Length: 179
Length: 155
Image (cartoon, rainbow over all chains, first blue to last red; front, side, top):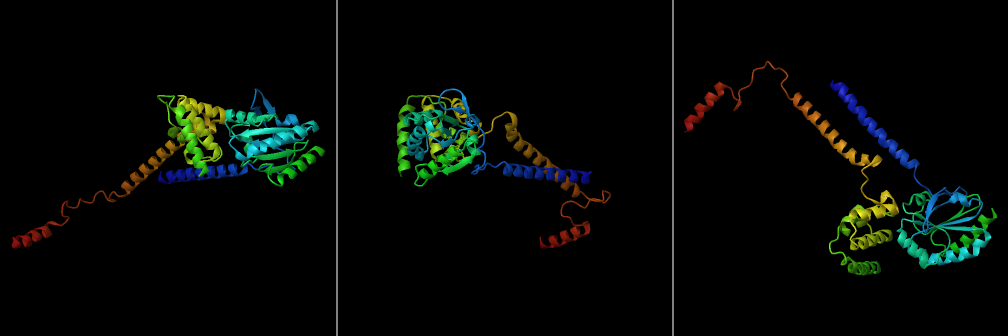
């Protein structure tokens, strides 16, 4: 009886350790990493920040896409907004799509931000941050440039207004449009 | 310093509307412990990030508008999703987070009780036929009598 009890206890302890190990392996395997240059950007469908409905990244396949992650509480996003709007105005006629993804933000504040900076490109909302985490975003603003096949051409960690980034940003758009 | 001044200014701005609600249903202090900062993954009271400050401002505003804690939490969940709350919900898979600690304590108690029971059994005498030793001093009768005699001489 005692031996059986001891064996049962050992089995339970072993099962607990195995369970914890499985959990650790699962979390390591499912860790989110930023998609690298050349890899396919993670697909998503997000609701529009302004107005009803959702927008899917797949619906822009065949066009170069600039994917900008931002938040209304982010200071550098304010200075970047004007530059993005200006670039959007100059690139939209060349078939380049700009998408803004507002993350971990209050909808009301985000709408005020869009209105205050007169941003006219489509804005999507990722309140939970699920999509943002799949893009490995650790701070905002960050910008991805995707080519017509939906592959990553560039990933800029920081505002595109940073010295050096502006040139990279435009070169990436040119490369994405050419591909 | 600038951040501190900004927080003080925000508090002063919010202090005005707060007076509009004579009997607030909840407090910022309470909700700061119930709501997570989405970017730093700690509760709001542990964070001073911009995202946390934004949510604190939102909560203060809603308290001033006489919203209840439940209303504020619901609004935050609608905006950020369930993970904005520090405590897991009481349904589905989240129930495990509530029940597992209780089951763990019960299992621990059971193991402890079993251990104590086994330990006490091991302490029992091996031979039940052995006569009981005298209670009290633990000395045999002869030694006790002689000890009494010696002590009597000193009285």
